[in-house]
Amino acid sequence: MAHKFDVNNKSKLDNPKRREMLPANKVLTVIGLKADDKFADIGCGIGYFSIPAAELIGQEGMVYAMDVESEMIEELNKKVDERGISNIQTIITKEYDFKLKGEPISYAFMCTVLHEIEDKVRFVNEAKRILFDGGKIAIVEWIKRESDWGPPISHRLDSGEVKQILIDCGFKEISIVELNEHFYIVMATYSI
Image 1 (spheres, rainbow, N blue to C red):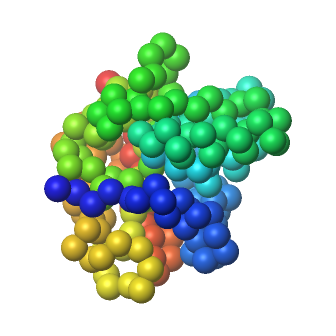
Image 2 (image 1 turned 90 degrees about the vertical axis):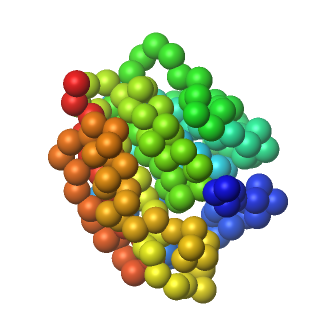
Image 3 (image 1 turned 180 degrees about the vertical axis):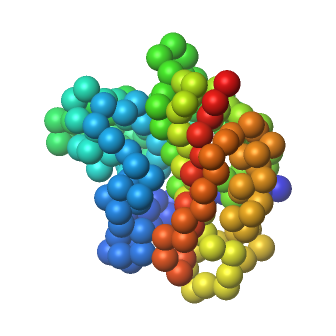
């Protein structure tokens, strides 16, 4: 059984240590998020990436902030309301059903989520389902090494494992970027 993040630790999702280790704007720049994108933040938590993504993509873009935990979505909704953000739509999902129908997404993004999922191929295939032809996926995960921060090494995924999952799901143009000593990003393109 995959380890799940404890919603009671949600303050860890936006604190000075995380901002130092995983600066949201840097990550969004590295993955190539751009104005007008339709961006799915899968496992959005309290909106650590959703809010900066909404600023980056502008009013013609849309962020679909998705999480299985209603408490996380409630926290993000408060932030969205307080800041008057109009281009974030929050969605309470199921693990293998993102509840998104209709307009396809240009970018599917997940940060430190995949290692928590039992059936990783099924999960990534659901991310693929919401993408349009030529859409991108970016998966940020912990580097598989011992660390005093983050999940135990036994819960972490090697970047090669993530790459193979993307291959198994039919993604192309796969690249791996080591963001820093803690995180890597695997990016790929969906092509019919």
